[in-house]
Length: 220
View 1 (cartoon, rainbow, N blue to C red):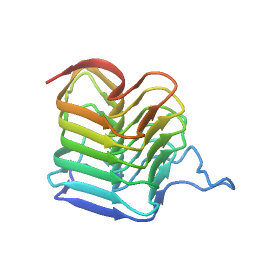
View 2: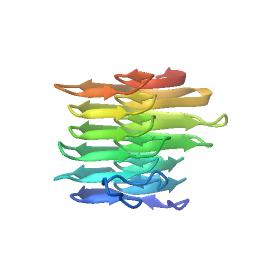
View 3: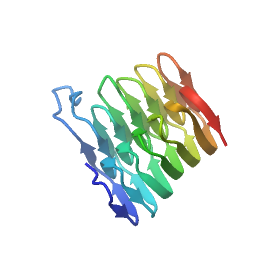
View 4: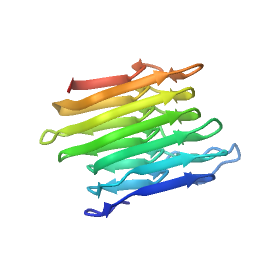
């Protein structure tokens, strides 16, 4: 878990193996109740980061668990990141959640806050797979929700993919699966998803090339 008030200058991870929570069954799958797994940070609460965060997958690298699974951060509660978060997920590599709630993202699995949050720039390059046994799946962020007393400001979200973003449930997007703010607006400078070659975004309901489901106004 993250600790309030920690300021990280920069984080770099070269992931060649597996990061997972739970116990594998005979079929190789993990249990559904082991949550908050990230390539760099499992759970971050009210922290700040002024330096770049880069996670590079290689070989057959995997980040897996139940719910709230991300290529960089599994569950982020109100972290302010003033620099760039970049993830590279090549062929044969994977971010996967086995839980019913899902919240699986190439960069961040679940992002929430009751105070204002900010992210400078998110870059997600997916040639492998981002997969959930539930819903709320995104090439960059699986699930975003901010409360009444706060705003969520993001400078740029850019996803480039030839791989797969897939959920067995609803709310699946090339960039963000589920985007919600009870204050009714979220600010982006740009948000893009470029699907190349055999890239695929797949789900049961509320599936979009950029956003799967949104319950707020998006403004620049």
